[in-house]
Length: 174
Image (cartoon, rainbow, N blue to C red; front, top):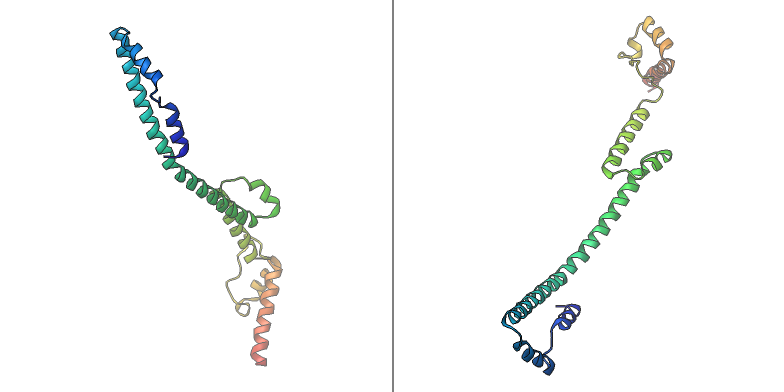
């Protein structure tokens, strides 16, 4: 039991003095029903002191657990903040302020979606959505197909033409 608990118990204990012995003799002069009531109060007082003692001991046992829980909570909060910063760093700067207070799970989903969208855009630069790329090699395409490709998607046409001539040149030169 801690010193605080012990001190509390000592304050509540009534020391036996000559004064308390004098009280006993005065109590014996009282009517029976009042004496019974006083005895019942003393028993109840003793029970409450015992409960208090047990409760104080329990508090002392739980203090280390409460301290440990506080440490764990602090570590958890640090981890969450690091994760939040890492996820926010994946977003564009103009979006970070908007999402800074969001739940980690939601923020993670948003960051993943943003990165997937960004990778999708980067993997196909210059390609206009909705126009399929030709399935044939440049050398296998007819004049009509080449003309259609040149009109619809000049960047792809130029790239395919350059690749074709580079391959042909490398074959002839190498």
